Image (tube, rainbow, N blue to C red):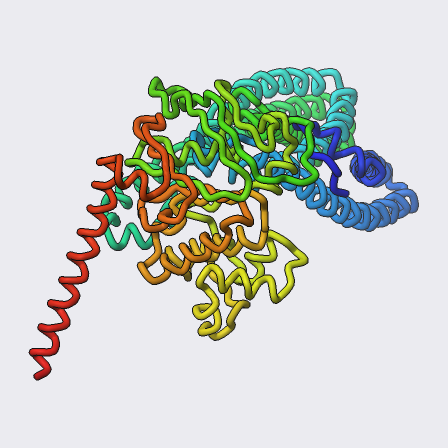
Length: 597
Protein backbone atom coordinates (compact mmCIF):
# COMPACT_ATOMS: atom_id res chain seq x y z
CA UNK A 1 0.00 0.00 0.00
CA UNK A 2 1.68 3.20 -1.18
CA UNK A 3 2.15 5.96 1.34
CA UNK A 4 0.56 9.26 0.44
CA UNK A 5 3.56 11.32 1.51
CA UNK A 6 7.26 10.56 1.05
CA UNK A 7 9.16 9.49 4.16
CA UNK A 8 12.07 11.52 5.51
CA UNK A 9 14.22 8.67 6.78
CA UNK A 10 14.65 4.93 6.45
CA UNK A 11 12.62 3.03 9.02
CA UNK A 12 12.09 -0.70 8.62
CA UNK A 13 9.20 -0.47 11.05
CA UNK A 14 7.52 1.90 8.60
CA UNK A 15 7.55 -0.80 5.91
CA UNK A 16 6.85 -3.80 8.12
CA UNK A 17 3.85 -2.35 9.97
CA UNK A 18 1.30 -2.70 7.10
CA UNK A 19 2.12 -6.42 6.87
CA UNK A 20 2.27 -7.22 10.59
CA UNK A 21 -0.34 -9.99 10.29
CA UNK A 22 1.54 -11.78 7.49
CA UNK A 23 4.86 -11.25 9.27
CA UNK A 24 3.42 -12.72 12.47
CA UNK A 25 2.05 -15.68 10.48
CA UNK A 26 5.42 -16.18 8.81
CA UNK A 27 7.29 -16.14 12.14
CA UNK A 28 4.72 -18.51 13.65
CA UNK A 29 5.14 -20.95 10.75
CA UNK A 30 8.92 -20.82 11.01
CA UNK A 31 8.70 -21.39 14.77
CA UNK A 32 6.43 -24.41 14.21
CA UNK A 33 8.85 -25.67 11.60
CA UNK A 34 11.78 -25.43 14.01
CA UNK A 35 9.77 -27.05 16.82
CA UNK A 36 9.07 -29.93 14.47
CA UNK A 37 12.80 -30.23 13.81
CA UNK A 38 13.46 -30.51 17.53
CA UNK A 39 10.57 -32.94 18.02
CA UNK A 40 11.91 -35.02 15.14
CA UNK A 41 15.27 -35.16 16.90
CA UNK A 42 13.61 -36.11 20.19
CA UNK A 43 11.41 -38.75 18.52
CA UNK A 44 14.43 -40.18 16.69
CA UNK A 45 16.16 -40.50 20.06
CA UNK A 46 13.16 -42.43 21.41
CA UNK A 47 13.14 -44.64 18.30
CA UNK A 48 16.77 -45.57 18.90
CA UNK A 49 15.97 -46.39 22.51
CA UNK A 50 12.99 -48.59 21.49
CA UNK A 51 15.13 -50.40 18.94
CA UNK A 52 17.86 -50.92 21.54
CA UNK A 53 15.28 -52.32 24.00
CA UNK A 54 13.64 -54.36 21.21
CA UNK A 55 10.21 -52.84 21.89
CA UNK A 56 9.19 -53.13 18.24
CA UNK A 57 5.60 -51.86 18.48
CA UNK A 58 6.75 -48.62 20.12
CA UNK A 59 9.55 -48.26 17.54
CA UNK A 60 6.99 -48.68 14.71
CA UNK A 61 4.70 -46.10 16.27
CA UNK A 62 7.62 -43.67 16.61
CA UNK A 63 8.62 -44.20 12.96
CA UNK A 64 5.05 -43.42 11.83
CA UNK A 65 5.16 -40.21 13.89
CA UNK A 66 8.41 -39.28 12.17
CA UNK A 67 6.85 -39.84 8.73
CA UNK A 68 3.80 -37.76 9.63
CA UNK A 69 5.95 -34.91 10.94
CA UNK A 70 8.10 -35.03 7.79
CA UNK A 71 4.98 -34.46 5.64
CA UNK A 72 3.82 -31.67 7.96
CA UNK A 73 7.28 -30.06 7.82
CA UNK A 74 7.15 -29.98 4.01
CA UNK A 75 3.69 -28.40 3.98
CA UNK A 76 4.68 -25.74 6.51
CA UNK A 77 7.94 -25.13 4.64
CA UNK A 78 5.93 -24.53 1.44
CA UNK A 79 3.64 -22.06 3.28
CA UNK A 80 6.62 -20.15 4.73
CA UNK A 81 8.16 -19.84 1.25
CA UNK A 82 4.92 -18.36 -0.11
CA UNK A 83 4.77 -15.83 2.75
CA UNK A 84 8.44 -15.01 2.33
CA UNK A 85 8.23 -14.33 -1.40
CA UNK A 86 5.07 -12.23 -1.05
CA UNK A 87 6.41 -10.14 1.83
CA UNK A 88 9.85 -9.67 0.28
CA UNK A 89 8.47 -8.44 -3.05
CA UNK A 90 5.85 -6.15 -1.49
CA UNK A 91 8.18 -4.51 1.04
CA UNK A 92 11.00 -4.19 -1.48
CA UNK A 93 8.64 -2.51 -3.96
CA UNK A 94 7.45 0.03 -1.38
CA UNK A 95 11.02 0.80 -0.37
CA UNK A 96 12.11 1.29 -4.00
CA UNK A 97 9.18 3.63 -4.69
CA UNK A 98 10.04 5.75 -1.65
CA UNK A 99 13.72 5.83 -2.61
CA UNK A 100 12.77 6.90 -6.14
CA UNK A 101 10.70 9.71 -4.59
CA UNK A 102 13.64 10.56 -2.36
CA UNK A 103 16.16 11.03 -5.14
CA UNK A 104 13.83 13.55 -6.78
CA UNK A 105 13.94 15.57 -3.57
CA UNK A 106 17.73 15.81 -3.81
CA UNK A 107 19.13 19.04 -5.23
CA UNK A 108 20.50 19.26 -8.76
CA UNK A 109 23.93 20.12 -7.32
CA UNK A 110 23.98 16.77 -5.47
CA UNK A 111 23.28 14.97 -8.74
CA UNK A 112 26.14 16.79 -10.41
CA UNK A 113 28.56 15.76 -7.64
CA UNK A 114 27.51 12.09 -7.43
CA UNK A 115 28.05 9.11 -9.74
CA UNK A 116 24.84 7.65 -11.17
CA UNK A 117 25.84 4.20 -9.88
CA UNK A 118 25.48 5.47 -6.32
CA UNK A 119 21.79 6.19 -6.91
CA UNK A 120 21.03 3.20 -9.15
CA UNK A 121 22.51 0.65 -6.74
CA UNK A 122 20.79 2.11 -3.71
CA UNK A 123 17.37 2.32 -5.38
CA UNK A 124 17.36 -0.87 -7.46
CA UNK A 125 19.58 -3.44 -5.72
CA UNK A 126 20.09 -2.47 -2.08
CA UNK A 127 16.41 -2.80 -0.99
CA UNK A 128 16.32 -6.40 -2.28
CA UNK A 129 19.54 -7.20 -0.46
CA UNK A 130 18.33 -5.51 2.72
CA UNK A 131 15.04 -7.46 2.74
CA UNK A 132 16.92 -10.67 1.95
CA UNK A 133 19.21 -10.00 4.92
CA UNK A 134 16.24 -9.32 7.19
CA UNK A 135 14.60 -12.54 6.09
CA UNK A 136 17.85 -14.40 6.71
CA UNK A 137 18.11 -12.97 10.22
CA UNK A 138 14.62 -14.21 11.14
CA UNK A 139 15.19 -17.61 9.55
CA UNK A 140 18.66 -18.22 10.99
CA UNK A 141 17.67 -16.91 14.42
CA UNK A 142 14.83 -19.40 14.70
CA UNK A 143 17.04 -22.16 13.29
CA UNK A 144 19.63 -21.22 15.87
CA UNK A 145 17.13 -21.66 18.71
CA UNK A 146 16.08 -25.15 17.56
CA UNK A 147 19.70 -26.19 16.91
CA UNK A 148 20.74 -24.93 20.34
CA UNK A 149 17.95 -27.05 21.81
CA UNK A 150 19.42 -30.16 20.12
CA UNK A 151 22.96 -29.28 21.19
CA UNK A 152 21.83 -28.64 24.78
CA UNK A 153 20.18 -32.07 24.70
CA UNK A 154 23.50 -33.54 23.56
CA UNK A 155 25.29 -31.75 26.39
CA UNK A 156 22.97 -33.19 29.03
CA UNK A 157 23.29 -36.76 27.77
CA UNK A 158 26.70 -36.93 29.43
CA UNK A 159 28.85 -34.40 31.28
CA UNK A 160 32.01 -35.27 29.31
CA UNK A 161 30.26 -35.00 25.95
CA UNK A 162 28.75 -31.73 27.19
CA UNK A 163 32.16 -30.27 28.07
CA UNK A 164 33.51 -31.04 24.58
CA UNK A 165 30.44 -29.35 23.03
CA UNK A 166 30.75 -26.31 25.33
CA UNK A 167 34.43 -25.77 24.55
CA UNK A 168 33.65 -26.14 20.84
CA UNK A 169 30.90 -23.52 20.97
CA UNK A 170 33.20 -21.00 22.68
CA UNK A 171 35.96 -21.56 20.08
CA UNK A 172 33.55 -21.24 17.14
CA UNK A 173 31.92 -18.09 18.58
CA UNK A 174 35.27 -16.30 18.88
CA UNK A 175 36.18 -17.45 15.38
CA UNK A 176 32.89 -16.09 13.97
CA UNK A 177 33.45 -12.68 15.54
CA UNK A 178 36.82 -12.38 13.75
CA UNK A 179 35.42 -13.72 10.46
CA UNK A 180 32.46 -11.31 10.53
CA UNK A 181 34.72 -8.30 11.12
CA UNK A 182 36.71 -9.13 7.98
CA UNK A 183 33.49 -9.80 6.05
CA UNK A 184 32.05 -6.33 6.80
CA UNK A 185 35.25 -4.59 5.71
CA UNK A 186 35.45 -6.54 2.44
CA UNK A 187 31.70 -6.15 1.75
CA UNK A 188 31.85 -2.34 2.00
CA UNK A 189 34.79 -2.20 -0.38
CA UNK A 190 33.09 -4.53 -2.88
CA UNK A 191 29.82 -2.58 -2.95
CA UNK A 192 31.71 0.69 -3.43
CA UNK A 193 33.54 -0.72 -6.45
CA UNK A 194 30.26 -2.09 -7.83
CA UNK A 195 28.81 1.44 -7.64
CA UNK A 196 31.72 2.66 -9.77
CA UNK A 197 31.16 -0.09 -12.34
CA UNK A 198 27.45 0.76 -12.57
CA UNK A 199 28.30 4.41 -13.22
CA UNK A 200 30.90 3.65 -15.86
CA UNK A 201 28.67 1.08 -17.62
CA UNK A 202 25.86 3.62 -17.73
CA UNK A 203 28.20 6.15 -19.35
CA UNK A 204 29.46 3.58 -21.88
CA UNK A 205 25.93 2.73 -22.98
CA UNK A 206 24.80 6.35 -23.28
CA UNK A 207 27.96 7.58 -25.04
CA UNK A 208 28.03 4.87 -27.73
CA UNK A 209 27.96 7.26 -30.73
CA UNK A 210 30.61 9.60 -29.29
CA UNK A 211 32.83 6.66 -28.40
CA UNK A 212 32.68 5.29 -31.93
CA UNK A 213 33.01 8.62 -33.75
CA UNK A 214 35.98 9.76 -31.65
CA UNK A 215 37.58 6.29 -31.59
CA UNK A 216 37.55 6.25 -27.80
CA UNK A 217 37.23 2.46 -27.57
CA UNK A 218 40.90 1.78 -26.64
CA UNK A 219 41.05 4.39 -23.85
CA UNK A 220 37.56 3.59 -22.61
CA UNK A 221 38.38 -0.12 -22.62
CA UNK A 222 41.49 0.65 -20.57
CA UNK A 223 39.42 2.64 -18.06
CA UNK A 224 36.73 -0.04 -17.97
CA UNK A 225 39.38 -2.70 -17.41
CA UNK A 226 40.71 -0.78 -14.40
CA UNK A 227 37.24 -0.36 -12.88
CA UNK A 228 36.19 -3.94 -13.59
CA UNK A 229 39.50 -5.25 -12.23
CA UNK A 230 38.98 -3.28 -9.01
CA UNK A 231 35.49 -4.74 -8.66
CA UNK A 232 36.71 -8.25 -9.47
CA UNK A 233 39.58 -8.02 -6.98
CA UNK A 234 37.32 -6.74 -4.20
CA UNK A 235 34.69 -9.42 -4.87
CA UNK A 236 37.34 -12.12 -5.10
CA UNK A 237 38.79 -10.94 -1.80
CA UNK A 238 35.32 -10.94 -0.26
CA UNK A 239 34.34 -14.39 -1.52
CA UNK A 240 37.73 -16.10 -1.19
CA UNK A 241 38.33 -14.76 2.32
CA UNK A 242 34.83 -15.65 3.41
CA UNK A 243 34.96 -19.03 1.70
CA UNK A 244 38.38 -19.86 3.17
CA UNK A 245 37.29 -18.90 6.67
CA UNK A 246 34.11 -20.97 6.25
CA UNK A 247 36.31 -23.95 5.38
CA UNK A 248 38.45 -23.30 8.46
CA UNK A 249 35.25 -23.09 10.52
CA UNK A 250 34.15 -26.48 9.13
CA UNK A 251 37.56 -28.01 9.98
CA UNK A 252 37.34 -26.69 13.56
CA UNK A 253 33.78 -28.01 13.87
CA UNK A 254 34.86 -31.39 12.46
CA UNK A 255 37.68 -31.65 15.02
CA UNK A 256 35.21 -30.88 17.80
CA UNK A 257 32.74 -33.46 16.47
CA UNK A 258 35.42 -36.14 16.25
CA UNK A 259 36.62 -35.31 19.76
CA UNK A 260 33.04 -35.79 20.92
CA UNK A 261 32.83 -39.18 19.14
CA UNK A 262 36.14 -40.31 20.67
CA UNK A 263 34.83 -39.39 24.12
CA UNK A 264 31.65 -41.38 23.36
CA UNK A 265 33.73 -44.36 22.26
CA UNK A 266 35.65 -44.46 25.56
CA UNK A 267 32.43 -43.96 27.55
CA UNK A 268 30.74 -46.77 25.62
CA UNK A 269 33.76 -49.01 26.23
CA UNK A 270 33.49 -48.39 29.99
CA UNK A 271 29.67 -48.88 29.84
CA UNK A 272 29.09 -45.32 31.09
CA UNK A 273 26.59 -44.62 28.27
CA UNK A 274 24.17 -46.88 26.40
CA UNK A 275 24.47 -47.87 22.76
CA UNK A 276 21.30 -45.90 21.90
CA UNK A 277 22.82 -42.75 23.49
CA UNK A 278 26.05 -43.23 21.53
CA UNK A 279 24.01 -43.73 18.33
CA UNK A 280 22.05 -40.54 19.02
CA UNK A 281 25.29 -38.58 19.50
CA UNK A 282 26.62 -40.07 16.26
CA UNK A 283 23.44 -39.26 14.29
CA UNK A 284 23.27 -35.65 15.48
CA UNK A 285 26.99 -34.94 15.69
CA UNK A 286 26.71 -32.55 12.72
CA UNK A 287 24.44 -30.25 14.72
CA UNK A 288 27.66 -28.82 16.14
CA UNK A 289 28.74 -27.93 12.58
CA UNK A 290 25.22 -26.66 11.87
CA UNK A 291 25.30 -24.50 14.97
CA UNK A 292 28.56 -22.89 13.83
CA UNK A 293 27.23 -22.43 10.29
CA UNK A 294 23.88 -20.98 11.41
CA UNK A 295 25.57 -18.68 13.92
CA UNK A 296 27.98 -17.48 11.22
CA UNK A 297 25.19 -16.93 8.69
CA UNK A 298 23.14 -15.06 11.27
CA UNK A 299 26.02 -12.69 12.01
CA UNK A 300 26.70 -12.28 8.29
CA UNK A 301 23.08 -11.34 7.59
CA UNK A 302 23.11 -8.87 10.49
CA UNK A 303 26.23 -7.31 8.99
CA UNK A 304 24.61 -7.20 5.54
CA UNK A 305 21.54 -5.55 7.04
CA UNK A 306 23.73 -2.86 8.64
CA UNK A 307 25.72 -2.28 5.44
CA UNK A 308 22.73 -1.99 3.09
CA UNK A 309 20.64 -0.09 5.62
CA UNK A 310 23.50 2.38 5.99
CA UNK A 311 23.86 2.74 2.21
CA UNK A 312 20.14 3.40 1.75
CA UNK A 313 19.97 5.67 4.80
CA UNK A 314 22.76 7.79 3.30
CA UNK A 315 20.20 9.05 0.77
CA UNK A 316 18.42 10.66 3.73
CA UNK A 317 21.62 12.30 4.96
CA UNK A 318 20.98 15.95 4.11
CA UNK A 319 24.64 16.83 4.67
CA UNK A 320 25.77 14.39 1.99
CA UNK A 321 22.71 14.75 -0.22
CA UNK A 322 21.02 18.13 0.42
CA UNK A 323 17.36 18.22 -0.53
CA UNK A 324 15.23 20.85 -2.19
CA UNK A 325 13.24 23.02 0.16
CA UNK A 326 10.12 24.95 -0.77
CA UNK A 327 7.94 27.52 0.88
CA UNK A 328 4.23 27.33 1.67
CA UNK A 329 2.84 30.16 -0.46
CA UNK A 330 0.72 29.02 -3.37
CA UNK A 331 0.01 30.77 -6.66
CA UNK A 332 -3.48 30.02 -7.95
CA UNK A 333 -2.70 31.90 -11.14
CA UNK A 334 0.65 33.16 -12.37
CA UNK A 335 0.99 36.23 -14.60
CA UNK A 336 4.62 35.38 -15.35
CA UNK A 337 6.36 38.46 -13.97
CA UNK A 338 9.98 37.84 -12.94
CA UNK A 339 12.22 40.16 -10.96
CA UNK A 340 15.83 39.66 -9.89
CA UNK A 341 17.20 41.73 -7.03
CA UNK A 342 20.94 41.80 -6.33
CA UNK A 343 21.25 38.14 -7.31
CA UNK A 344 24.70 36.66 -6.64
CA UNK A 345 25.67 33.02 -7.01
CA UNK A 346 28.72 30.80 -6.62
CA UNK A 347 28.89 27.03 -6.95
CA UNK A 348 29.81 25.09 -3.85
CA UNK A 349 33.57 24.51 -3.40
CA UNK A 350 34.35 27.05 -6.14
CA UNK A 351 35.90 30.43 -5.38
CA UNK A 352 34.66 32.07 -8.58
CA UNK A 353 31.46 34.13 -8.49
CA UNK A 354 29.32 32.98 -11.43
CA UNK A 355 26.68 35.71 -11.13
CA UNK A 356 27.43 39.06 -9.48
CA UNK A 357 24.71 41.40 -8.22
CA UNK A 358 22.20 40.87 -11.05
CA UNK A 359 19.11 43.08 -10.91
CA UNK A 360 16.43 43.24 -13.60
CA UNK A 361 12.69 42.97 -14.15
CA UNK A 362 10.89 40.89 -16.78
CA UNK A 363 7.30 41.94 -17.38
CA UNK A 364 4.53 39.38 -17.88
CA UNK A 365 4.09 37.98 -21.40
CA UNK A 366 7.31 39.50 -22.75
CA UNK A 367 10.23 37.79 -24.45
CA UNK A 368 13.66 38.36 -22.94
CA UNK A 369 17.01 36.94 -24.06
CA UNK A 370 20.42 36.56 -22.46
CA UNK A 371 23.51 36.48 -24.63
CA UNK A 372 27.21 36.37 -23.92
CA UNK A 373 30.23 34.18 -24.39
CA UNK A 374 30.47 30.72 -22.79
CA UNK A 375 30.94 30.86 -19.03
CA UNK A 376 29.26 34.23 -18.62
CA UNK A 377 26.55 32.70 -16.37
CA UNK A 378 23.59 32.45 -18.77
CA UNK A 379 22.64 28.81 -18.05
CA UNK A 380 23.17 29.30 -14.30
CA UNK A 381 20.77 32.23 -14.42
CA UNK A 382 18.07 30.10 -16.06
CA UNK A 383 18.58 27.26 -13.56
CA UNK A 384 18.09 29.75 -10.73
CA UNK A 385 14.89 31.04 -12.33
CA UNK A 386 13.62 27.46 -12.69
CA UNK A 387 14.57 26.79 -9.04
CA UNK A 388 16.99 24.02 -10.05
CA UNK A 389 19.60 25.99 -8.11
CA UNK A 390 19.16 28.19 -5.06
CA UNK A 391 21.09 31.30 -4.16
CA UNK A 392 21.36 32.60 -0.62
CA UNK A 393 22.34 36.08 -1.87
CA UNK A 394 19.74 38.24 -3.51
CA UNK A 395 16.18 37.45 -4.55
CA UNK A 396 14.18 36.05 -7.44
CA UNK A 397 10.55 37.18 -7.36
CA UNK A 398 7.71 35.52 -9.27
CA UNK A 399 4.65 37.78 -9.30
CA UNK A 400 6.29 39.75 -6.46
CA UNK A 401 6.72 36.64 -4.28
CA UNK A 402 10.18 35.35 -3.40
CA UNK A 403 10.66 32.09 -5.30
CA UNK A 404 12.01 30.49 -2.09
CA UNK A 405 8.64 31.15 -0.41
CA UNK A 406 6.58 29.44 -3.13
CA UNK A 407 5.45 25.83 -2.77
CA UNK A 408 6.68 23.15 -5.17
CA UNK A 409 3.45 23.01 -7.17
CA UNK A 410 3.50 26.75 -7.87
CA UNK A 411 7.05 26.59 -9.21
CA UNK A 412 6.89 23.35 -11.20
CA UNK A 413 3.46 24.04 -12.75
CA UNK A 414 4.19 27.60 -13.80
CA UNK A 415 7.80 27.38 -14.98
CA UNK A 416 9.09 25.12 -17.78
CA UNK A 417 12.77 24.71 -18.61
CA UNK A 418 13.80 23.33 -22.00
CA UNK A 419 17.42 22.22 -21.62
CA UNK A 420 20.13 22.20 -24.23
CA UNK A 421 20.37 18.40 -23.93
CA UNK A 422 16.85 17.27 -22.92
CA UNK A 423 16.16 13.73 -21.76
CA UNK A 424 13.61 11.80 -23.82
CA UNK A 425 12.04 8.71 -22.24
CA UNK A 426 12.14 5.24 -23.76
CA UNK A 427 8.52 5.29 -24.88
CA UNK A 428 6.49 6.49 -27.85
CA UNK A 429 6.43 10.12 -29.00
CA UNK A 430 2.82 10.36 -27.86
CA UNK A 431 3.58 8.90 -24.41
CA UNK A 432 6.47 11.35 -23.98
CA UNK A 433 3.96 14.15 -24.50
CA UNK A 434 1.31 12.56 -22.28
CA UNK A 435 3.88 12.37 -19.47
CA UNK A 436 3.54 16.14 -19.20
CA UNK A 437 -0.26 16.19 -19.22
CA UNK A 438 -2.23 12.94 -19.11
CA UNK A 439 -5.47 14.39 -20.47
CA UNK A 440 -3.83 16.05 -23.47
CA UNK A 441 -6.13 15.91 -26.49
CA UNK A 442 -5.06 14.75 -29.95
CA UNK A 443 -5.60 18.28 -31.26
CA UNK A 444 -3.27 19.69 -28.60
CA UNK A 445 -0.63 17.13 -29.51
CA UNK A 446 -0.91 17.92 -33.23
CA UNK A 447 -0.68 21.64 -32.52
CA UNK A 448 2.41 21.22 -30.30
CA UNK A 449 4.15 19.00 -32.86
CA UNK A 450 3.39 21.50 -35.62
CA UNK A 451 4.70 24.45 -33.60
CA UNK A 452 7.84 22.46 -32.75
CA UNK A 453 8.36 21.58 -36.44
CA UNK A 454 7.95 17.83 -35.77
CA UNK A 455 4.66 17.18 -37.54
CA UNK A 456 6.08 16.20 -40.93
CA UNK A 457 8.79 14.04 -39.38
CA UNK A 458 6.28 12.18 -37.20
CA UNK A 459 3.88 11.64 -40.11
CA UNK A 460 6.66 9.97 -42.13
CA UNK A 461 7.40 7.40 -39.40
CA UNK A 462 5.93 3.89 -39.98
CA UNK A 463 4.22 3.96 -36.55
CA UNK A 464 3.71 7.70 -36.55
CA UNK A 465 3.17 9.23 -33.15
CA UNK A 466 3.30 5.75 -31.57
CA UNK A 467 6.96 5.25 -32.59
CA UNK A 468 9.21 4.19 -29.69
CA UNK A 469 12.18 6.56 -29.57
CA UNK A 470 14.58 4.48 -27.42
CA UNK A 471 16.33 5.24 -24.14
CA UNK A 472 17.21 8.92 -23.98
CA UNK A 473 15.63 9.34 -27.43
CA UNK A 474 18.54 7.49 -29.03
CA UNK A 475 16.54 6.88 -32.23
CA UNK A 476 16.13 10.62 -32.74
CA UNK A 477 18.67 13.16 -33.90
CA UNK A 478 19.83 15.89 -31.53
CA UNK A 479 17.56 18.40 -33.22
CA UNK A 480 14.58 16.06 -33.10
CA UNK A 481 15.10 15.49 -29.40
CA UNK A 482 15.17 19.24 -28.78
CA UNK A 483 12.04 19.78 -30.85
CA UNK A 484 10.23 17.02 -28.93
CA UNK A 485 11.32 18.69 -25.67
CA UNK A 486 9.93 21.99 -26.94
CA UNK A 487 6.66 20.23 -27.83
CA UNK A 488 6.49 18.93 -24.24
CA UNK A 489 6.93 22.46 -22.89
CA UNK A 490 4.22 23.78 -25.22
CA UNK A 491 1.80 21.09 -24.01
CA UNK A 492 2.57 21.91 -20.39
CA UNK A 493 1.38 25.43 -21.19
CA UNK A 494 3.08 27.08 -18.20
CA UNK A 495 3.13 30.84 -17.73
CA UNK A 496 6.94 31.03 -17.91
CA UNK A 497 9.00 29.11 -20.47
CA UNK A 498 12.80 29.12 -20.28
CA UNK A 499 14.78 28.05 -23.36
CA UNK A 500 18.42 27.13 -22.71
CA UNK A 501 20.23 26.93 -26.07
CA UNK A 502 17.16 25.00 -27.27
CA UNK A 503 17.92 25.57 -30.94
CA UNK A 504 21.63 24.71 -30.75
CA UNK A 505 21.25 21.28 -32.40
CA UNK A 506 18.87 22.39 -35.17
CA UNK A 507 19.65 23.00 -38.80
CA UNK A 508 18.94 26.46 -40.20
CA UNK A 509 15.50 25.54 -41.56
CA UNK A 510 14.34 23.82 -38.36
CA UNK A 511 15.84 26.61 -36.28
CA UNK A 512 13.82 29.12 -38.26
CA UNK A 513 10.63 27.17 -37.59
CA UNK A 514 11.40 27.09 -33.87
CA UNK A 515 12.14 30.81 -33.90
CA UNK A 516 8.70 31.39 -35.37
CA UNK A 517 7.19 29.09 -32.71
CA UNK A 518 8.89 31.09 -29.98
CA UNK A 519 7.78 34.31 -31.62
CA UNK A 520 4.21 33.00 -31.68
CA UNK A 521 4.33 32.89 -27.87
CA UNK A 522 5.04 36.60 -27.79
CA UNK A 523 2.43 38.41 -25.75
CA UNK A 524 0.98 35.09 -24.47
CA UNK A 525 3.77 33.73 -22.25
CA UNK A 526 6.80 35.04 -20.42
CA UNK A 527 9.65 33.67 -22.53
CA UNK A 528 13.30 33.74 -21.46
CA UNK A 529 15.89 32.58 -23.99
CA UNK A 530 19.57 31.80 -23.74
CA UNK A 531 21.07 31.47 -27.22
CA UNK A 532 24.32 31.63 -29.17
CA UNK A 533 22.43 31.98 -32.43
CA UNK A 534 21.57 35.64 -32.30
CA UNK A 535 18.97 35.29 -35.06
CA UNK A 536 16.87 33.28 -32.59
CA UNK A 537 16.46 36.28 -30.32
CA UNK A 538 16.23 39.01 -32.96
CA UNK A 539 12.60 39.75 -32.11
CA UNK A 540 13.03 39.65 -28.31
CA UNK A 541 11.52 42.57 -26.41
CA UNK A 542 14.79 43.01 -24.53
CA UNK A 543 18.24 41.42 -24.67
CA UNK A 544 20.66 41.38 -21.75
CA UNK A 545 24.36 41.06 -22.58
CA UNK A 546 26.26 39.12 -19.88
CA UNK A 547 29.99 39.16 -19.37
CA UNK A 548 31.79 37.51 -16.46
CA UNK A 549 28.59 37.15 -14.42
CA UNK A 550 27.47 40.75 -14.82
CA UNK A 551 24.99 42.53 -17.06
CA UNK A 552 27.19 44.83 -19.08
CA UNK A 553 24.53 46.03 -21.51
CA UNK A 554 20.84 45.73 -22.40
CA UNK A 555 18.40 46.82 -25.08
CA UNK A 556 16.60 45.58 -28.17
CA UNK A 557 18.50 43.76 -30.89
CA UNK A 558 18.86 46.89 -33.00
CA UNK A 559 19.94 49.00 -30.01
CA UNK A 560 22.65 46.53 -28.99
CA UNK A 561 23.81 46.14 -32.57
CA UNK A 562 24.34 49.88 -32.78
CA UNK A 563 25.97 50.55 -29.40
CA UNK A 564 27.72 47.31 -28.36
CA UNK A 565 30.73 46.40 -30.44
CA UNK A 566 31.11 42.91 -28.89
CA UNK A 567 27.48 42.08 -29.62
CA UNK A 568 27.84 43.39 -33.19
CA UNK A 569 31.02 41.36 -33.68
CA UNK A 570 29.29 38.19 -32.48
CA UNK A 571 26.41 38.68 -34.91
CA UNK A 572 28.65 39.57 -37.85
CA UNK A 573 30.84 36.51 -37.15
CA UNK A 574 27.76 34.32 -37.46
CA UNK A 575 26.78 36.03 -40.72
CA UNK A 576 30.31 35.59 -42.09
CA UNK A 577 30.23 31.88 -41.21
CA UNK A 578 26.88 31.49 -42.99
CA UNK A 579 28.19 33.32 -46.10
CA UNK A 580 31.27 31.09 -46.21
CA UNK A 581 29.10 28.00 -45.96
CA UNK A 582 26.82 29.23 -48.75
CA UNK A 583 29.81 29.99 -50.99
CA UNK A 584 31.22 26.53 -50.27
CA UNK A 585 27.90 24.94 -51.18
CA UNK A 586 27.71 26.96 -54.42
CA UNK A 587 31.25 25.90 -55.38
CA UNK A 588 30.45 22.29 -54.63
CA UNK A 589 27.30 22.51 -56.76
CA UNK A 590 29.24 24.07 -59.67
CA UNK A 591 31.90 21.36 -59.48
CA UNK A 592 29.21 18.69 -59.45
CA UNK A 593 27.46 20.22 -62.50
CA UNK A 594 30.71 20.52 -64.45
CA UNK A 595 31.49 16.88 -63.84
CA UNK A 596 28.04 15.85 -65.01
CA UNK A 597 28.38 17.93 -68.16
